[in-house]
Image (tube, rainbow, N blue to C red; front, top):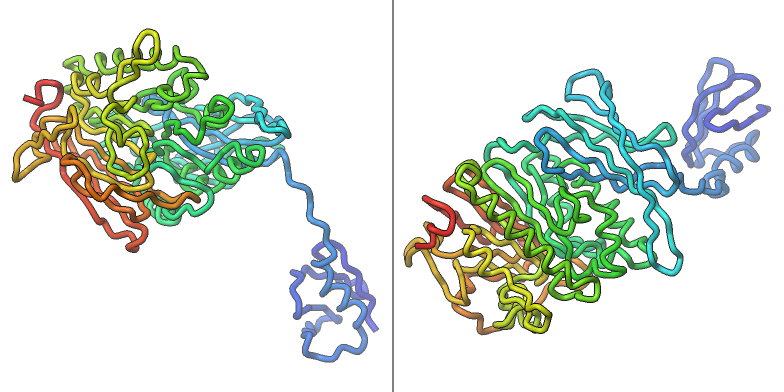
Length: 481
């Protein structure tokens, strides 16, 4: 009769030790030099007790508590400085902040960079505390691929890879969407595959995350950030705030993301290839209780940024100016949102503030903004070139060739627990195409004159259900005439 002793992942039988993987109904033992397999279908006479102990061992194991020093929720962002990338992650105990990385094919992790850690206490009743780590990688070579992991000697993340953003990148490609939740995230799997295929240079998430990040004392936010790690750890995940981030003065949004500038990711701009991208907060028009001055600060910053982008040398290098903000100026949904009204706060401003708050439509038009990206409505809608509630197509035959006003795209159907919205059956003349399919938008800036936009339907197995080419021989305010 054998004496069977179990020590972690070893079985010792009469002094002879062998590694094993605990897997019922099959167990492996050594007797001298002969390997004998005992199946649960074979009557065991001499090792009943040992076999029973081993088979039920998984049921008796008490799971380890979570490793509070283990990095999670890893995501990238571009800080606006060529040849750099910011890696952000979360732990639940304070640790060092370290990224080890290397160019693809070099000695693994032979470079390293240190960063900072910031405590964040959620304002829910549990006052849950977490630590947000940020490390900036510099002197990255354009066109190269890098592998990295992040953490400390108290715990390391999985290994990820990325391709640096560079202002001279040729034909940058983006996925665009808003209103993605951790429940019913319909578009996530397809975005994961596109990320793994390496066809995206960046993702633009145009507000509304998780539904909602502050829920369950910010556990919903944690789960959402874990979910998007499968895409955001590989490409820059660039964001703007939406109304679903408003709890506790947008604290989960402001603390979890790491966008360029010094505005806690509320508004900023960055360059990539031939495009200047401006991210803004439409929420400053609606949550005056958090500081009416934010509305005027953002407007002044936008004006200054657009003036800089329109300097002749800058517009020549980056002729496309694209904005992204959560709540649209126009929409044809049947929900009475701000964009369904003629006097939209975002478009025309507010007269009930002192002084009156200017809207954004005139500002964008006067500075020749080419494309305006929005979300909030849980639908997809493409507009004809529009200004002042009127259509300004380039021509009847080719409306997007040398259009006479900005082009608006609403892409808020990525998938969340609130499902999709309904459309008004009688849209205005500026509505060109509408869909309630779940999905997201592709955008590629091909060169100084051509830009592609296409809507991917998740409901229709990834089919592109709408697409346009915007063709412009010139950019800026003069292009409208």
